[in-house]
Length: 453
Image (cartoon, rainbow, N blue to C red; front, side, top):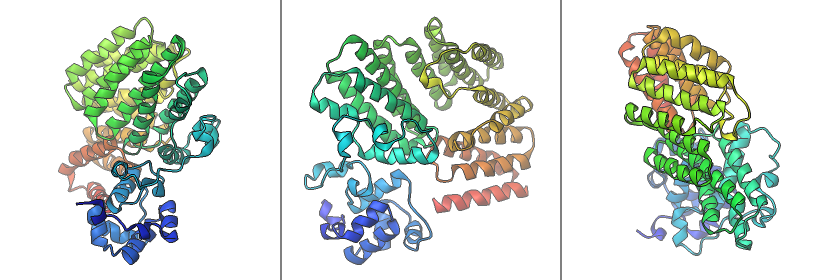
């Protein structure tokens, strides 16, 4: 089937009202215009965009909005709407169509004279959920300064490295608010641009070490968000590539962090005993160079691997070691900024839940959640899911159901496979208690949410 067989005709895409509707991402208007001028029925739109007919009908009636990036990309693909019209990067199907215009890029950014932060004015702002979403949308249609500066010449200076490092930090903090399903394309795009500079640029040794470190950090972040999106095999490849980059930079703690993160993935998706070996290897490799907070992070991940293996003594030793290292904190690398007392308590609570010790788990999880910023919806959902599981293992079915409902509310609109899987785990665990009214209420809410997705 050729593109002309399925895309909206050019004259429809060129209509001012269609361009305006696409720019606003007003899909009620887009779908109506596709029907009025392109002859597209609601069922055809649903089929081509991989949406349910009910969902398309609700959008056309103005009862529902479409905001998720992956759904917008499917609409771009399904209706043949060029990415730039929807504020997206050029879509894969466009690359074979030379007549499709490339996305507009802000002149100041494309000159390579200012980084994205300066253009958007968020260098000194705290990264909030709203700002993170705005950054994510603009990141998709703005070329990284790595690309634009390399066009002017292959010599890489400290200024570009600083901009790359700043962008890595912004991306890392965007992950606090945006699910991996929406963020992984942005991170891997940034990584590709940075890797090209490493391969083709000319720079002194100290600049090269910083570039390789940034590449390693981007690999860790790419793996993390891909894991959150459910792409575990791709994530593992990024972790291993990042280890090589960090080792080439002489950054042993970062290389160990990548190995430790891989251990965490394996503990969740593979053989927990293999995860223990990976976690201990990371600790051994970085014991002479890692800062106290970094060691606390590595011991925390080792504790989780032990818990998943059913090894209570090993888990307790690792949790104690994490506490001891945490108390000795000093100057720390940027990538460990998120580890605090709440995170330590939550991890300990998760471990005790996994080891069927809910009485020890509940106060730790409750304390950690109480101190946690609930604007971080994914983490709040994940941590409350463990609290719900702890309540259930303690026989507190109604409290478990109440927490499960809170998890359901937090995951609404959140594009995170990790959070969705935890919600599914809770649903399976609650199923034997369907005679309890609170469990039936949760199940009804769950089914309603799934029907609207």
